[in-house]
Length: 462
Ligand SMILES: [Zn+2]
Image (tube, rainbow, N blue to C red; front, top):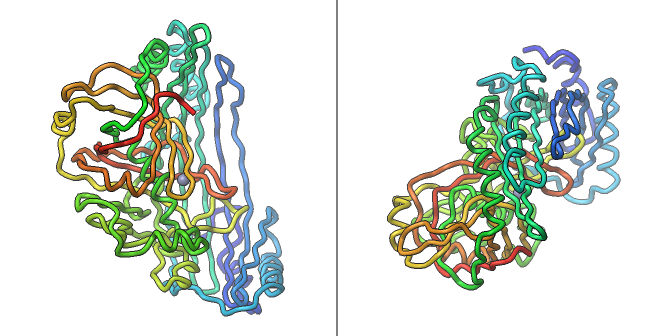
């Protein structure tokens, strides 16, 4: 197997890792190219391509990590030595990493429709069309469109004998509209993405038209009276809920460092009904959070976090797995060579149940149907989310559009109150995940429609 051009060869990389005073050492080298187009209002604010190249060395000595990142790919041996020296200054305990098999592999990028075959001018023309549709809608005050594509080749090599090349083509976009009438302002937006298929951005004309019209319609929509309501969430909102409110609590670095969370996130504890199954895994194919190996060379897996309502697993790096006496799950990820890998989600999914949406609606005399996600925050088990779009449910039917609503609650109580899980799984590949300084990391989240009893819903945005 040959290294991508510009990167040093395998022999040189492996030689650089040998003979250090370290319990473990690794190198991660990367070349990348990105393209982006950003519109603010009618103006194309940024259009262009950039390329990057660099690497990092990480070494473990007596339980402590040394880490350095660099752009100059020469003298790799000195860089590993420096990381080991750094670690040796602080290391005072035993180094513990859960074992993984050494892997030698070459994984090409998944490419379905290659954006490299589409001229930049053609991409601009398409986004111009979407922007024109938005601006043709009366009462639109402004718009924002961001398109980005990133192509990377990463070589990972470790003192444990792994040598893995992986390619990746990640695509994402956000289209947002702000409408205004006097002092009244409303917004609507959509985030989309794809692992390797440019067609994700094509043919959205009708959807963009609907988006702009919805922002305008919300200007005159009635407010919901706040309080406890029966809520049906669409797959996007439910997927973001499971990522933001629950998924981050399953990241073991967080659990391990936090005594209160350790006491809450006890394996074997019941968090929901028998119909509730939640998984995370990069082994789920062809999604934005999919890969074959994580950034420590651990093979991707599919990990049950909740099975039939019971907490059965969590997400690990090699280090958190060893410290908690569990198995690594392939969730150690770094956004690029400037950062060491940390425990991250990949594709986080509420598995489908048996309920049909029409039957879920039929059981609701007066409630709320909320779609999409606009933003929010979490603090331990408490969350506050803004839904992008909300409708009243009356006598089992979706009725009038409402002003946007805010959902508030405790994630565990909310999961207990899920009383129906749909059969219509859909995966949302828009947006990205932030943790520490590393954002936006490509992830996906998915869910069928879900129904939640006694959900606290506020009528005004925070
Ligand atoms: Zn996140």
